[in-house]
Image (cartoon, rainbow over all chains, first blue to last red; front, side, top):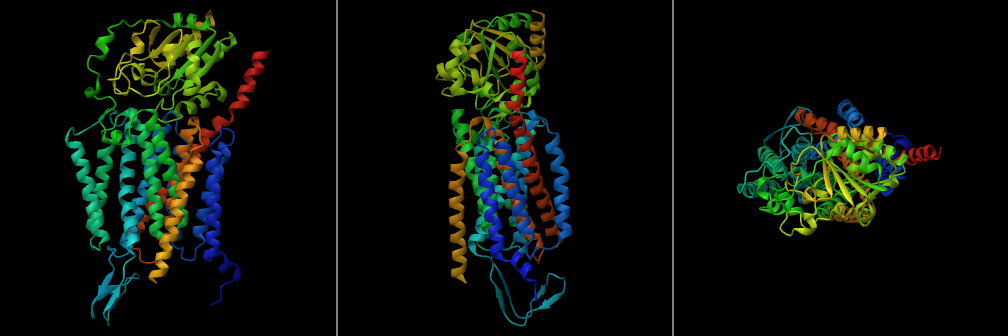
Amino acid sequence: MSTPLAVSFIQSESFLDVLYIIAFALFIQGLRGLSGPTTAVRGNRIAAVGMAIAVVATLLQPSEGDWGLIVLGVAIGAAVGVPAARNVKMTAMPQMVALFNGVGGGAVFLIAWAEFRRFGSTYGGHSYTVGSHITLPGGSEGVFLHHVTLPGPPTYVAIFSVFAAIIGSISFWGSNIAFGKLQEILPGRPITLGRAQQFVNLLLLAIAVACGIDLVAGAHSELLFIVMLIAAALLGNAVVLPIGGADMPVVISLLNAFTGLSAAATGMALDNTALIVAGMIVGASGSILTNLMATVMNRSIPSIVAGGFGGGAEVAAPGGEAAHGGTVRSTSAADAAIQLAYANRVVIVPGYGMAVAQAQHAVRELTKELETRGVEVSYAIHPVAGRMPGHMNVLLAEADVPYDQLKEMDEANPEFQRTDVSLVIGANDVTNPAAKNTPSSPIYGMPILEVADSHSVIVIKRSMNPGFAGIENELYYDPKTSMLFGDAKAAVSEITAELQQL
Amino acid sequence: MAVILASTLTTNLAILVLAGFVGFVVISKVPNTLHTPLMSGTNAIHGIVVLGGLLLIGLAGNDTFNHIILVVAIAFGTINVVGGFLVTDRMLEMFKSKPRAKADDEDKGAT
C-alpha cells in the first residue's frame, strides 16, 4: 500500500492550504482590480482564476469520489448558467444578479440540509444500546454488542450549519421574489399584509430560530429541520414582497451580503477556509454597498426591510401636489430639438425609463448628433438611478458612451447652473426638488441631481404617473420645465430625426 | 481532542474576522460607477459554496436523497459561479472598449 510520492504530496493538507491561499490572494487582487474601469476586466478574470484554483484544489482531495454525480451537477449548472449569462440583455442585469444570488443561497441551505442528514438527522450524536440494529452506509445490517455512544459534531458546527440553513433559505426565496418583481412577473408595487406584516415576519423568524435552537440542542428530527427551512423560506417571501420597486437595489445588495455570510458560515461548519474567506469578503463588501445605497436614498435599512414604501397610496404626500397647483407644459420633439440644437451645454439625466425602453443607443445617437453641432454634452448619473447602483453606467457603456462623459452626482451638481438644457430621460425621484424643499416629503433629505438649477429642463416621460417612490415631482410644474410625453426610445429617436432636418 | 477542536474553531474565527476587514478595505475604494459589476463580481465569488457540495458528495454516508440534494446544490453553485463571472465580464468589457470608441469619435470630429 504505497502511494507515489507526487500523489501524496498533491493530496497533503498543506498543499491544499497553499492552493487555497493562492486563491484568496487572487480574489483580493481581483476585487482590487474592480476599483477602476481600466483594470476591472482583468480583476474579474483574476478572481475567476482564483475560483478555478480553489475548485481544482478541492477536487484533488483523496476523499473525493462520485465523479459521475459531480460532473452531472456541474454540467447542469453550466448548461443553465452559461447561456443565461451570455444572452441576458444589459437592461435585465439587475434581475439576473438577483437570480444568480438566489441560486447561491439555494446551494447554501441544501448543503446544510445534506450535512444534517449525514449526521443522522441530529446534531446530538447517537447512543446505541446492546443489541440495537444499525444500517451501515453500504446497506448491510449490523448489531451492537456493546453500549456505544457516538458523539455528534461540536456545538459550533451545529450553530453555523443552522445559521447557514436559515439565511440561505431566506436569501434563496427573497432573491427569487426580487427577480420576479424586476422581471415584472410579480407586480412591482408592495404586496403587504398591512399591520399584521411585522407581526407575521417576527413570528416566522421566531419559528425558524426556535427550530434552530432545538436542533442545536440535539433534537433528533428531520421534520424540525424542514419546518425551519420552510419558516425561513416564508420569511424570505414575506420580507421582500412588501418592498417597492424603488428599494430593490438595496434589497438585492442586502441579499448578496446575506448569501456571502451564509457561505462563510458553511465554511465554519465544514472547516473549509476557502468558504470562510470568500464568503466573508462578500458579506463585508455587500454590507458596505447596502449601507451606501441606503444612505444615498436617505433610507435606513430597517425601514426598507419593514417595507410599505415605494408606490403605495399611503405615502402620497397629503396636499403636496395641490400646494403646487401649477400647470404642466407639454412640448413636441421638434421644439425639443430646436432647444437642444441652440444650447451650448446639455446634460442628460438618465433613469429607469431609459433602461425599460432600451433607449441607450438612441441616446448615444442623439449625443453624437448634438456633438457634431458643437454642443457640449455630458451625462449626470445619480448613484441609485435605475434599479442598481451603476445600472445607468453599464447601459451607457453598452452604447459606447465615453467613460469621462459620465459625471457622478457630486461632480454634476455644481455644473447645472451653467447648463442650458437638462434632458431628463425616464428619471423621476432622483430629480425631485421636494427632497430639498419639502420636509414632509418621504424622500426629504435624499441627495438629488439639481436639474432645476439649469436654464431649462426637458423631461421625457411616458405619463404624469409618479415614480417608484409614489410621490409627485415638483419639477414637472416648474415654469422652466417642458414635458415630452412618450416612450423614451421613440421620443429620443424623434428628436434626433428632427435635429438632422434642422 | 477538545483542545484540537477549540483551536480549529478559534483559528477559523480569526480567519473569519480578518477576511471581513479585508472585504471592507478592498471594497470601500470602488467608485459608484462600478457598483453593478462589483455586485455581480462578489455575487460570483460567493458561489464558492459549490466547494461545500463537492466536499460533502465525496464523503461516505450519503443516501440517495442526499445525493439528489447535493447534485442540485452543485448545479446551483455552478450557475452562481459561472454565470456570475461571465455576466460580470460582459458588463466590464463594455467599460473597457470605451477609450477606443472615444478616440474614434475625436478622429471623426477632427475631420
